[in-house]
Image (cartoon, rainbow, N blue to C red):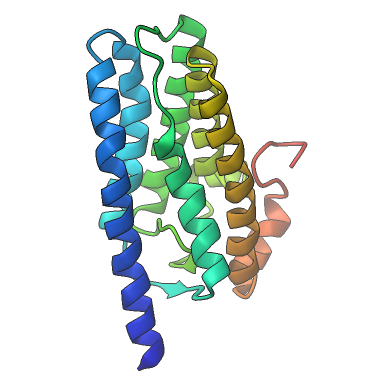
Length: 201
C-alpha cells in the first residue's frame, strides 16, 4: 500500500512540476516567435514531452530519490533555455531541429503511452527507431537542442543544455538498470548495442 501511495505521489508530482516549469518557457518563446518563427520546432518538442507525460500509462517506477532527480532534471532543465531577442534560426539549424523533432516524435509514437520522467518499466519497445538505437527519443532531443543552441549561442543556454545532457545520460543509466531486470529488455540490448549514437555509444 505504501508503495502505491508513493508511486501515485511521484506520478502526480512530476506532472505538476513540469506544468509549472513549462509556463515561463512558453511565455518567453511566444514573445520571440513573431520575430523568429523557426523557434516553433523547439516549442513543439517540449510541448510533446509534457503531452506524453500527461497521457502515459502506469508502470513499475524506480522510486529512489536519485531516480526521481535524474529523471526530472533531465526532462526539466531544457525548459530553462531562452531565445536571443531578434535572433533567427538559420536553415542548417532549422534542418537539425526538424530532424531531431521527427526522431523524437517517431520514438514517442512507437512508445505510445509508455513514456515517463522517472525510470519505469511500462513495457519494452523494440520497433521503429528503437531497432537502431536504444534511446532514439533522447537522441532526438539532443539533435533539436544542438540546432537551437547554434542559433541562440549564449553561455546560459550552453550551460543549461550541458547540465541537461549530463542528467540525461544519468537518466539513461538509471532506466537501463531497472529495465535490465526484464528478460525482454536484456535480449533487446543484445540485438541493439548502442544507446544514442550508432557505432559510438
